[in-house]
Image (cartoon, rainbow, N blue to C red; front, side, top):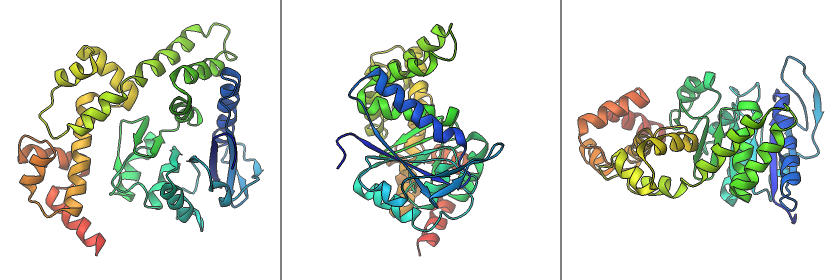
Length: 320
C-alpha cells in the first residue's frame, strides 16, 4: 500500500489532451506549495494505448490498466470522444467496485456520461459540459442533472463542467484532503507563471476557495432540514452571514443560490420516494418540504419534464 494518497486517473480513447496534463500541473503545484502533501497519480487507460482528441491527436500509452484503480482513494474519469457509447469492457464494473470500496469518484466534463452508464449516479446530482447537459439528462433520466453547476458534489461523487481540464475539480480534491489554505496556495502556484501582473487573479482564486470552504456545515444543515419551511433569512442566520453574502458564497460553493439548492434537495428526495415508496403525491410533497402539492407538481415538471405520477410510472416500469 502506498504511503501517500493515490489518485487513479481513468482515460479512454479520445481524451482531451489538457485533461491529461492538468493533473500533473496541479499535483506538482501541491508538492511545491505544501511539502509532504504529495499524491501518487496513476494514469490508467482502457485500452492501455489511447489517442487524444483533435485538433492535435497524440498517442499515449499508460502504465496501468483497470488494475490501477484498486487501492485508489479517488478515481477520476476524464472526458472522451466516445462518451455516447457503452463504456469499454470492465470499466463499469471497476467503477462500481471503487464506489463499493468507499473511494471518491469524480468525472471531468463528459466523463459524467461514463459514470452514469455504470449506474453509479442514479438518484444523484451531477453535471457535465454545459453543451451536453440536455443530452445527459435525456440519456440518463435517473440522474439529477444540474444545468447550472460548474462543480457538483453529492456523497462520494464530484462532477464538473470541465473548465481548464477540470482544474476546479482537482483543486476541490486538494482542499478536501489538505485544507483550503493549501488549495489556495496551489492555485497561486498555477497562476503565477502565466502573467507577471496576475495578483488580481491569484487573489480571486484564493478568495473563492477560502470563502466557499466554511459553508459546508450550513449546506449539511440545509439538507437535513429540507422538510421544514426554510427561508433565505433562516439559512443566512445559520451561516451567520447577511443574505447577500450568503448568496454569493453559496453560489461559489455549490453553483446554485441557497433556495435553488434547497429546491434541488427536495426534488431529489421526491424522486427517490416516487421510485421506492407507495405514499401519495400529496404525502410526498409534504414529506420533502413543499407547502402544497400543486407547487410540488409544478416544480417537479419544470425540473424533469414529467409529472410526479408519470415519473413514478416510468420508474416502476424500468425496475420490472
